[in-house]
Image (cartoon, rainbow, N blue to C red; front, side):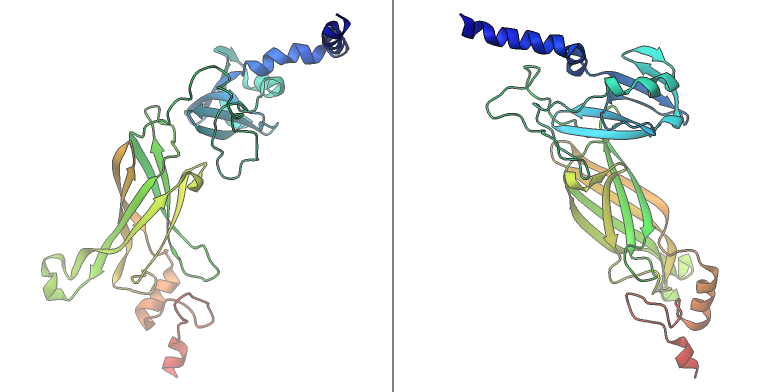
Length: 304
């Protein structure tokens, strides 16, 4: 009899000695949901994540096997709601700590790159904490993309395009969907005049095509980050190519479909008045002492 009562007395003693722990236990089991409207008009709703700091609020979105965290600077918050009730942003910034939670340690979750390691795997043979099977991943219904000219190595010329791919679900939230990304770059190219007389010696030509697999590990806060290097045709070394291009993007997501977007007016050669003059006058865009990935200009030595 005494051996049966011993665990009961031990628990009672712990509860009496540490009443704050017993009081905080229900708060951890019931995560707080916050909705914020930013000064730019956008609104976000999610669980208050334990990674929140006095400088920024971190909201956590959980859907199926995917967990996304969005950091939001406190000064950008215009209006806030906590569990459906209005709360001043300053008050929320002071009281978020006891409301912040980690993601469910017993649910199957997929961490995004850069996140700290956490016990995200369910214990072997143990059902989900809520007793329900995990929701399937959200279905992609559209994509939003951005294409930027970028330099990612040690030379002076641009190396290619960076694509920020954002697969979106019905709530316009980013889905870290895997699939295949196909990109085509079109630009105006100088041709022999009689080959393109109607367009005054220029025609729209595809100068490069890329095809690349997209995985969950490629996603960042702005979506999947994809580097696409220029190939044989490089706008900084070929003045027959235009300075702007049209980027056609095609993303195939298994289970969701095929999605396309075209971006016109994408700069593919940096604006540089001095380099443009050098290129027209000498045929070289870079100075002899500048390191490039395709050799160094030698127009000084050519004139000697």
